[in-house]
Every structure is written in structure tokens, then in C-alpha cells.
Image 1: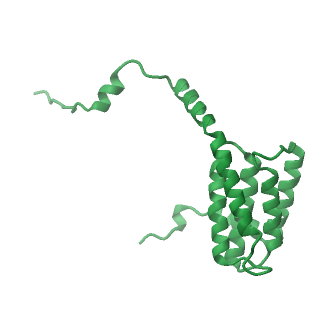
Image 2: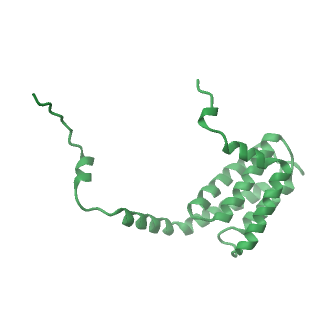
Image 3: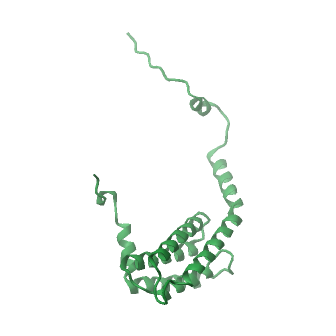
Length: 174
């Protein structure tokens, strides 16, 4: 006796089975074109986020210290910039903003105070803003190297390195 297998007819299986549509390469090209059309709007959002960061960064809660709320606001705005910088391939802005995230997170976790390091990062972000005059490759490398020195000075480079090593096995399950 033969066994019969029944496959239900779904609209998705019918659509997949049809000929036509677009090829993978065409779909990728269309997606890139769609993304490129959003670049100017993204640059405006980046610019607005940088201005919002400036308002926080240049007005610390105390002369030599940011409040925990200010550091958290910095992290939220930086996250938005990192997302857009990565999406639109602004590598220097991405790395600079990530470095500011490491400083803000490190200051928050260790309860250290250092307004100057945050100011340096803000100025670096302004230099690599998509609407700023472009820097050459050597200038960008030098700037990023100096930002790494700030992280190393505070020991925050180890904080981000340890965060990268966290795996799901390290997270307790209950």
C-alpha cells in the first residue's frame, strides 16, 4: 500500500513556484538604489543627533562631571549615529562615535569624571560628520589613534574588549 503525502496549497508556495520576479542581483541593486535615496535624510538625522549631543556634552551637570542621566542620553544618541553611520558606510564617524560610546559607558560604569575626554570625542565627531569637509585617510588614522589613547588612558579599551568576549554561554539561564 502506498502512503500519500498531502502538501497544503499556500499562496506563498504558489508565488515561489511562478516564473518571473527579479533576480537576486536586481533585488540587491534596487535595495542599494533605495538606500542611496535615503542618504540625504540620514545625513540630516545624523546632523540633528550631533547637535543634540553637543547640547548635552557642552553642558555637564557639574564642572568636571556628567550626570548618569546625561551619560545615558549620550549613549542613546550615539547608538542612533552608529546605526546610520554603519548603514551608509561612514566608517570614520562610526569608529569615532563607538569610541565616544566606550568613554561614556566607561565613565558611567566606573563613576569616573572626565569632561575633557568627552569633549575631544565630540570635536572628532564634528570633523567626520558627513556634512563636514572630508579628511584624508592619514588624518583619520591619526585622529582614531589619538582617540584610542584616551580609551587606553582610562582603561576603557579593556571594558569594550571584555564586552566583545561575552557569549551566550556566559549568560545565566533560569
